[in-house]
Length: 222
Image (cartoon, rainbow, N blue to C red; front, top):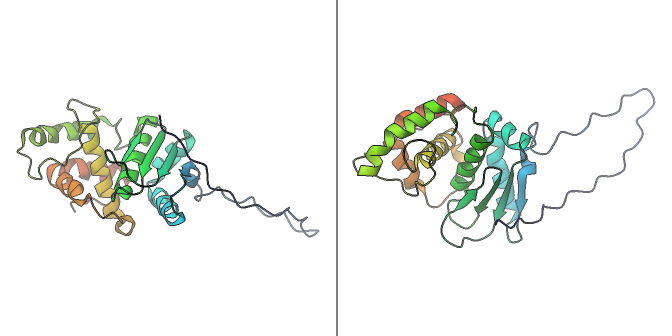
């Protein structure tokens, strides 16, 4: 079971002052993370730096609006953990996620897990795990990956299954991540894991093109 850390302490607000006679009271402050409130889904364990938390929040705020809204509306939570014990860089159960900050590919893992969580929470989300056209395009790419004839080889760690072939869900997630970072290249600060995205680009160009169009992202394949 995932053990969740403490939320970062909130700043203490000063007591409100009465508005000057004849002037309307100020509007209420927006929720954290802008209009979607996406920052509120994060908890940071002891050992996670403020810079790591702020960077994760910046990534989440750059996600397509419908994904942000889905995550917030469904009470999603994402734990940031320090270090990396080996194995998976991140995981989720649909509403709760965990990403290790010391894996060298925490940025890719974060986008990967948030995409999967949103797709499970809202199966009607375009380009997500519940989108039959996206699933079909992923399944169309999988046989060549599995039999070793795909041009980009096997990107590895293909486990999550949503259609006909084991791993087609992870292939969809990889495609979304590739398109996301093609749209927001400055947010990808990973030191490893680039080969996963490059392999997916070569193996599933039609899938990436469809997800980019469905989610309003830049198609990494141009």
